[in-house]
Image (spheres, rainbow, N blue to C red):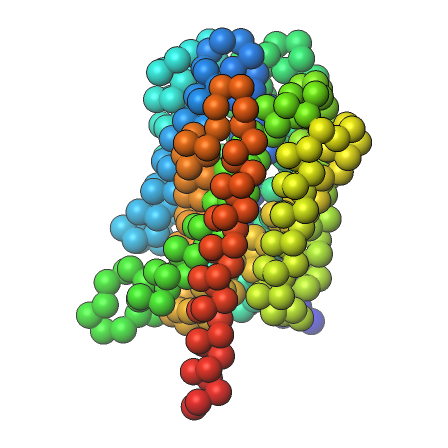
Length: 389
């Protein structure tokens, strides 16, 4: 019976629930900002501290830093002495959030890029646990559910905090919310077993694994491009910033449902079926964003998009494992997803204007369908290879 209460690793010894919870906690701390990012960047823009294009730029530089820090950590850092690595990264993140207070212009971009480094290290610590489990999509779903629940609480609190103290109140709130990461670091495992690789191979994934990471990047990039412009899209529909904030909270609530659905569906439904379903959800939501619609429908559309985003996320891991059974690509899946969060806003810069941002909706649709096409090619070629054996 004790075996039922352990996280069984595919590689290395089993992990106790306390260790798994600590690792997931570090992952939650690493991505807390994402839940309030549209609101906090919208507040910076409203206060004149960054321009409209600066919304995408700021999101891009931090996400790039997170992605590259997580990827390099997975390749270069041996998975041992992790307690102190996690604690120091958590402390550095708290300091970076506090340093953003009163910053404006270029200094905002520099500080948030610096914040992305400890965020990436914390994300790597969590992914290192998930990539070694027997059912990684289920543990990814558990992580996403914990993350969006925390983000929802933060977004609801942020609505009050930022209405009184603006963007600085939001960053102070993030600093406080990041502090538990120091405790989580000492609950998480202090080391992990190394992942297997062929003799003489580098730590990089093989070609098919790299293609799977590109597919992850393009597919997830689509939602990142659209989501960051939530508040401007609301304004163009004739709706207020408060409606955008409510839509963000509704999205986070729907994301909890999406994470719960992914947990239940893990191991029962093929990832490609999930991707087709979520593609339809995204396209339906984005069509509505391009229209002049009432507030309730805008909020509902954003909730649908949020549900699809979190339902989709955990199934990107088994997609990379099908392409690369060594799981080296799976170890980089979260980095690719975070990089998509940077690439989406970066691409969106060229699709939006100061007065009209709806071009990002067409961009998002093109990226989404291109990513799905690459995933389909990988999936059906893998099926043909298995059938021919």
